[in-house]
Length: 162
Ligand code: RP5
Image (cartoon, rainbow, N blue to C red; front, side):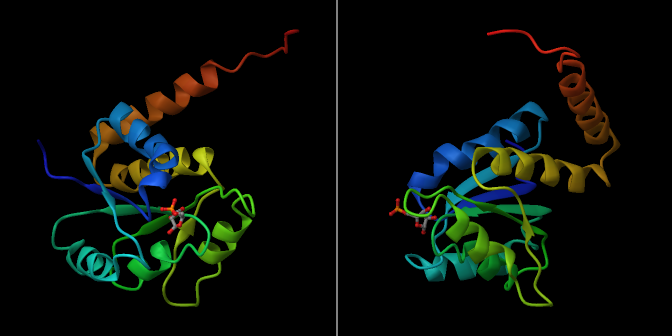
């Protein structure tokens, strides 16, 4: 297995159905990644170790998803210069607006690139990570261009009845 270039981290097993959408995109684009449960509140020492070692382990982007009091993306961003892409997981109580607000309002100095709430945000997180890696990887850039062109080509010009 090649060394992971992207880390997908999430606060809980319950986030995996959402974060899997990021993994699917990275699989399609043949980008090596790892997926880990790293909770800001339940496993803070694991979070610290992950953030501290991310750059030296060769990770080029981290996609961090969490729900509710979603402190994981911001806290990992505080421990690494590796770009962090935040995914607000949709919650039952507040529909993910809580997650979004917890992730998006970072203080100056420690940015998190925040995606949309839920599955679309996770998929876009995968695409954003691939775009970051594409800057230094022309073959991946070609695969990403082809992926985008295929999506555009799949959109019909006219709507049809159900
Ligand atoms: C957050 O709390 C996780 O990211 C998850 O979205 C949410 C609920 O976690 P569980 O109670 O389902 O484990 O930390």
